[in-house]
Image (cartoon, rainbow over all chains, first blue to last red):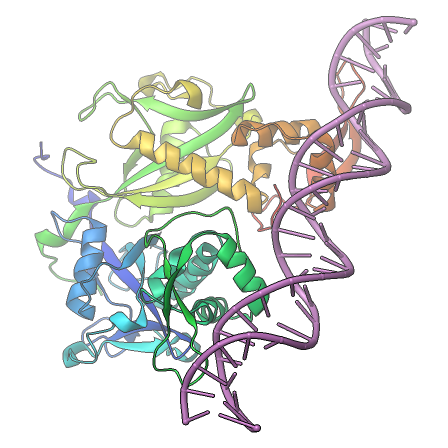
Length: 227
Length: 227
DNA sequence: CCAATAGTGTCTCTAAGACAGTATGTT
DNA sequence: AACATACTGTCTTAGAGACACTATTGG
């Protein structure tokens, strides 16, 4: 049931950009690539591309995740917003549908192999000037992430399968940029029933070993409220 | 700096659909139009259209608001989400960027004049089968609206300039589908500083006249939390 | 004076947040 | 034994929610 002819007036390109967050060394990091073509040649930017026929925007996002960041495993992905303020792209009015993904540090297998585009995690605190409105997009993503931490369990997507309560607290502290009280945090978090003790303890430490926990479900879920 | 040639592979249509909410007779209503063309001919659907070159999606939404619903005044408008699940449009994969607008009943001047497309408010409780995934979109919009009532002041966009506390409470109760306690509601709402007494009282009533209030600012603002 | 809605205050209970010392491993 | 981190409980306070009577106007 394809339309025979669509007026040129109604055709557009549709961009898809992906904000890939992870936590390294207790600092929030975003994956950036160095553009080697116009426009904004040699600027750092979010990995992105254009939606193709016969794929959806989320499929495009996953393709970009794979092509430009070498990431394939199932990662948390969520649509953010469609940016199309006039002037965002010098080639004309090209809306971009943006996605956010969260990756635990341990899953960063791709290293710096793909030299061609130099994909690289950079700390939020020392971000250069980015191409297009990508700084705005990252700011938006961070805001969304912080909000969602407060009423969902998506923190699981930044942690390995097993982790200590201290690790969990550090993850919250890093994203929220806010210190939390250890006793209050544990009291509250354990009361939520989201995690279970695995019985195992952290090996290799040279201090008192901490108990390792795991999320009861590694799927997005909404909570009443917590932090 | 237009690109000379864009591969056909990367061109798409981009739809824009608008969910227009209002409250009539203490019931949530959505503006629908009856499609008089394929696909989904004769189905009720959200007012929508395609984004044109040289307009942004929000401009397209405002154009649709005007063309199909006869609404021009400044109304609250907010982007919701971009839907593009495969199969949502039988003509192919056409993403739609959706917007939500909120209109106070008093501002509904357009009546049922535009017979051509029969735009009509219908209560959420008695919605027919809609074209495309428009039912999903409305469900999403309602969920968003309910969430935002709890941490923003956007309820102002469903009320006239002056209103009684009872009106305000009814607006919340209608959208949230939940009865609220009169004393607790007033205590809390008045403590927020969002509204001010106008000194005037409701005229024309044949009971004890209620004080009329107005929002101190009819602009979207985020609150800590309230309901 | 009757009808009808407007308006008002207290108590209980839960949860958030402040706060410091003991326990248990490693070396 | 010394060290480093894991782990734990109480008190205070603020806010949410339950609850019922008085006030004011029009007819």
